[in-house]
Amino acid sequence: MLRSKVLFFIIVVFFIHPVFAANWKTLHDKASGINLNSVSADALSKSVSQDDLYVLGLVYLSARQEDKAKEVFIKVRKIAPSFFPAQWGVAEILRRKHDLEESKLILDEIIADHPEFIPARLSRVYIYYLEGEFHKAMDLTQEIVDLGSEQMDKENYLRAILMLTANKGMVAHYGGIIVKLSHGRKILPLLRKAQSLAPYDAQVYFGLGSYYLLSPTLVGGNKKLALEYLEKAKDKDPRFADIYVRLAQACRMNKDEEGFKKYLDWAFMLDPGNELANDFKSGKCRFICPVGY
Image (tube, rainbow, N blue to C red; front, top):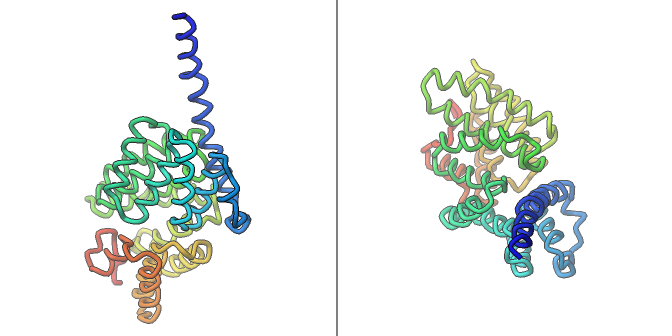
């Protein structure tokens, strides 16, 4: 009897867990290949599979339709209460809705129980970033990137690289000359790596546009390139409010007050609680305003 229990434990730990660990990566990769326009309107009402529903929720998240995504993730939780990726989906929506404290509670619990689940760790890193803990955010993101692409799906690996560039940029901005040199010089190579992985991705365009907008001319700043990349980002992901904030800043630098007001209004229309937009409007510029904006 004891031998049977030990054998069962070995199977659970060494066989079922790796299979499940691989499963969430497969589902995320599947979702990244689905366009929202290809999803039928009655997909939610007809589907009863936790995996299919989870993929649908991810597709809605990618399209920035958080309310629909939340409806799907809640349905998954009802079907499979122990399916923690759906709970992460709820936490990610809370983060996007700026309920950071509630999101942290959920994310910290998932990370404690399932440290291999990269999406939760990245969502937590993003909250550190929003709270101004840039060093902690950078170190944790570096740990994730160092794991390598085989430990996560393609989209989250890309996201980790881009978040690393953002956090290195903040650490460089607030650091002394040595810190600026050690971290600042690594940003563009990382962005180029992200571009090689997903050359037409909106967040890659946004990362490059932000880099060229915020960097001094002496180290590669280029207003023309910044506008080109940010416009591409807007065309690929028109519901991403951060893009409009950076476009507004670019317009202000170019003395285009009409464009400045238009883009900032769009940012607040899409996301009234957007941290970047509110930071810029307040003049605090914690998340960096371009020189001479």
